[in-house]
Amino acid sequence: MYDVTKIRADFPILAREVNGKPLVYLDNGASAQKPQVVIDAVTRAYSQEYANVHRGLHYLSNLATEKYESTRGIIARFLNAASEDEIVFTSGTTEGINLVSYAWAAPRLEPGDEIVLSVMEHHANIVPWHFLRERQGVVLKWVEVDGKGDLDPQAVLDAIGPKTKLVAVTHMSNVLGTVVDVAAICRGARERGVPVLVDGSQAAVHMPVDVQAIGCDFYAVTGHKLYGPSGSGAIFIRRERQAEMRPFLGGGDMIREVGRDAVTWNDPPMKFEAGTPGIVQQIGLGVALQYLMDLGMANVAAHERVLRDYARDRLAGLNWLNVQGTSETKGAIFSFTLDGAAHAHDISTILDKRGIAVRAGTHCAMPLMAHLGISASCRASFGLYNTTEEVDALVSALELAHELFA
Ligand code: PLP
Image (tube, rainbow, N blue to C red; front, side, top):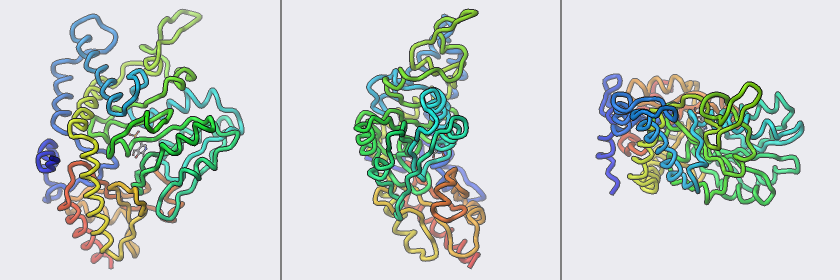
């Protein structure tokens, strides 16, 4: 039984007030709050179990290494990767996608080669490809979303031509909430011999993910949205792609031998992990993912579907509110603007006065904003601890904002 009251008690911050009102945290798309088990694990790691990893032969170093490395196996289970060697630790999705850009794409792509991406990507899945456009003449091919905010897998496959070397798409839009059929994209791309990178930053937080069933080559996740510490994360990289990658950052840990005139690399995944990593962050991420798996991601998804349906119906009753994205596959992420001149920042300030945290701005998705023809929006993004009462609080605060600006 999914007991949201009990779950909320696991997250100490949810008990606090903001501006004299109970906190209603609806900015989960930006970053999620942490359960006590994660906070405790971080405290324990620093107060009882801390040393550098992979380097020492002493007790604490071995203990820290064991705890840190155990997260790799937990991530592999969370994403259903075939082997934990396919999991490369990163500081988050941004680093994961940059790793692929620098280590896999840059050495392989020639001027005129193409990367296919959708117009609703986060900047983290755009700018690393712009580097290749600027530096080595790679062409970015953009696939539009339709009026509901859906990305048709066939449109992505139709954009693949003889020069396409990579498809890079999000699994779930951080603005519209649309869930993309990435398995269909991967199937078609594989038939055409084109690898696929999936940005799983949002999707992995809201639904079970199986990278083997999806059939992707790269799948990036970011720990702070997964109820873990900031600075933690990972990217799944299929074995065949790892074999094609040169190292990214150089330094300790990623080498086997270093001489004056030569250097040899460690085996993957260590080959792609240079220097002292986010030891405690990754330990905390392991605990967060175990917490999610204990709840059951299918149960989390079911709870959030109830929130989505309730929020969709309640927001639909506000005829001066324009919700962006009406996909059938939409998750519990609602971006909206209000009729009239009110700027998204002003709306979010009014909501904040009522203790309600939302995000306002372009959500690191400027091409999507241009496509939608808006300069900014407010975004209410729900998580596993949110309730229908919090939807009601959002609606009341929006009604107040509308009255103020009418
Ligand atoms: N991709 C998507 C869809 C996101 O929502 C985000 C974060 O907002 C990112 C990538 C970037 O994640 P991070 O900033 O943790 O690297």
